[in-house]
Amino acid sequence: MTMRFLCAAAVVALAGVSGVPDAHAAPQKKKKKPAETPAQKQPAPAQQEQQPVIEIEPENQPATPAAPGTPGATPGATAPSAPETPEAPATPAAAGTKQESWQDVVVVVRKPFLKNGRFELQPSFQVTLNDNMIRHYAPTGQLIYWLTDALGVGVEGQFYTHFDTFLEAHDLVGEDYRRVPTLNEYVFGAALDFHYVPIYAKFAMFNNYMVHWEGMFTAGVGVTETRVIPRNQAFPGWENFNITPNVGFEARVFIASWLTLNISVRDYIFVDKFENVMRDTPDVEMAKSNATSQLINNIMFGVGISLWLPPTFSYTTFR
Image (cartoon, rainbow, N blue to C red; front, side, top):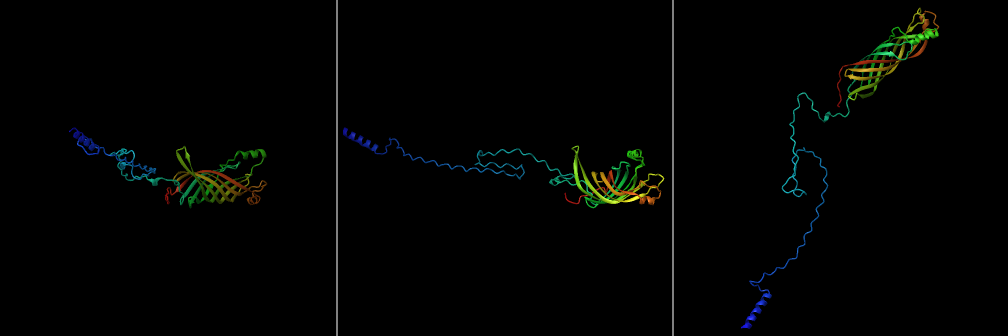
């Protein structure tokens, strides 16, 4: 009996060792699977440097939400956008008012004064600069027609006077040398002139006003009447008519569309005849034949204004 019990216990023990399942036996441990090698993460593609974007749409467009894959973006949230400023409603332009635009931006400013096709009436007053014995004064008038903005043709005339007075040098010569100087007085002058304007400029006055001015050269030819002043008051004098070319320069400042202020220097060149110092007869024809000739440069300084007709002008070319 005892032997059978021992044999049965041995058989049961062998069965448990050989792997026969037993209701009370501990569950068999499963074989562990080899650990899977974690997949190597692919390096994230290098982000290309963003090129600056030129914004052509209005700035108040709604902001585009960031993509979920964008670094730093929180899923389900959008990037905060700046508060939109409400646009002011467009105000319709009032009738008769000019709206400004890019076309009103001027790179080269137009000349504020045009002369082409206009007449210039120029009254002025001239005075002799280079005669040390007799000083002449001359109210002068010019009428000029401007063929272009730089070229004009005109006529001029002046009446001379010296108010029957002489300068100090005239009296000193008589006192020192015991002789009366030989003098001629100017009576009248007229000329046909051509004008050319190569200079146009402007300057600022008091850092507040822009003043436009131009420089003009003049050349012409005309005639000048002179009268001989005899030394002996008992002898008569005579008149000379001399061909007179002239050259000069004039500067003008533009005041208004119909008004300019002018200053000028002119040289009237002619050959004049003077009484002979040995004259001893009242015969005028003989005195003329014995007269002495001398080249005269009658330099005159003038100040005047110009009145323009028509008083207004219009531009004929695009700005």
